[in-house]
View 1: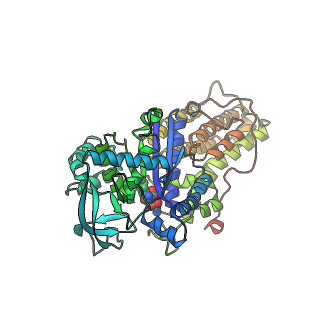
View 2: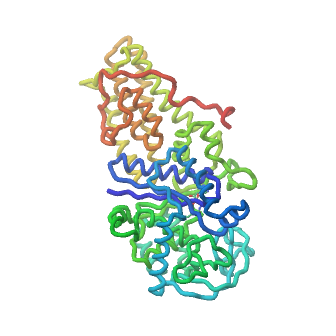
View 3: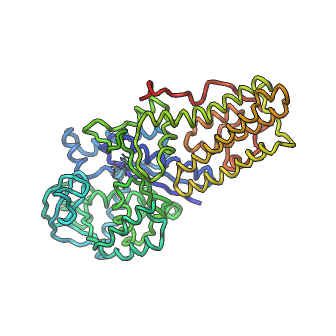
Amino acid sequence: MAFYITTPIYYVNDEPHIGHAYTTIIADIFSRYHRLFGEDSFLLTGTDEHGQKVQAAAKARDLDPQTHVDQMVVRFQDAWRELEIQNDIFMRTTEPFHYSVVQQCLQELYDRDEIYLHEYEGWYSVSEEIFYTDKDLVDGKSPTGKVVQRVVEKNYFFRMSKYQQRLIDYINANPSFLQPDGKRSEILGFLRQPLNDLCISRPVARLNWGIPLPFDDQYVTYVWFDALINYVSAIGYRQGPEREAEFNKWWPAAVHLIGKDILTTHAVYWPTMLMALGIALPKAVFAHGWWLNSTGEKMSKSEGTVIKPAEVVQKIGVEQFRYFLAREIVFGNDAKFSYDGLVQRLNAELANNLGNLLSRSIQLVTKNFAGEVPALSATPAPESVALSAQIGATATIVRREIVALSPSTAIGAVIELLSATNRYFDSQAPWKAVKEDPSRAAECLYTVLDVLRAAATMLSPVMPNKCAAIRSRLGLEPIGSWEDASRSGMMRGGSTLVFGEPVFPRLEVAKVG
Ligand code: MSP
């Protein structure tokens, strides 16, 4: 099985913030889970480097645009390295191979009369790089409140309207294509109005930082038309027979992860472009919600309410940050970012539920069993059997929820398992039992350590290094297999545990917030 997942390619001018980090971390988590399940996985992220804003920013810095983007892109690359993103490609739209693919697509569509020249009058939003008609405007601004300017010009158009019915039929026939469900209804609602053709060019006079149209050098390609094609150019589309197998292996993508702000481009422009090019549609487009600031507003650069990932990481640790982002939001919904919420969640679930259980059980084994894992009991008590059985049941839920694109629920299932284990640990009270009935204490400790072993693997795509550290404490090799995570009784009696500092130190609001 091949699993191809993409993040949006981010505007290279922007500074990486928590929203970008969110999509990218979740995509990385999905990719790592699929690999753990034994599949081949390919994760694409990258930067969108053409367009008016980039041209203007380069000019303001007195640099040519390529030098400007070469400098800016490093911030994203560094940020993703710091957040432990294992991307298989970092796609840049200024790569020569991408340039060539976009031009080939344009030429083919032009030759087939899917693209035509037309004089056009409309409203243009520079910040969104989108054209609007009179009826699109709300109080003289774009539907999202951006300033627009009146523009009359000749441009090239893609016959998007021609594909309207086919797209509606496709969405209806493939309910998992647009997710979550609310987004499917939103797009179907949008498609009840007649769909316009899509303007895919910009006159060189206004914008020259883009890919020239191969059939008219007075124009460059509209940035979205250029950017969306990255999802196929990255994996070898139209790059000769040597890369054909690669393309066929990964395409159609399993999922394009996006924020809800760019749903129309991914759910309408991109599928109709693919239809015109005769390429299969991605299996799913999932639009997630927004991270808002602690008072529930959109983070704003000008008001200084944007949260920078590096800041949070420095306070709480990189893998705790990955965990929090994936766990806190029911995937698809909006959420407020607050340090209070973060500290509460991490202390309850990582420091207490997981970390404390690990320390306490290792400590008891160290003290009472010379640090050696007790052997698996031949006649375990029903409570121990029941808890052990929960390992396999949990792994099944985790896998199902990850496949269903629901990371928070998947993690929640592991937390449930750990809560049940804590209840079992408390009711068995091995610290007391060890005096009266050492074999019962041994059985309890074995069972708890065995859950921790499996849980560490189940959470490893979220927190790779922390989970490897937990496994090392348990005397295991740092990386476990999914098969191993799905079974109980895999802890080896007699292996030596390592007692050490807490893997997840408790956080204090006063220090973090
Ligand atoms: N360049 C386009 C995408 C082209 S894809 C072919 C673009 N770039 S962007 O830099 O503006 O990134 C937008 C994406 O960043 C959103 O779709 C979302 O994935 C992420 N987020 C940005 N802010 C966000 C929040 N506050 N919360 C969650 N994610 C958000 O659009």
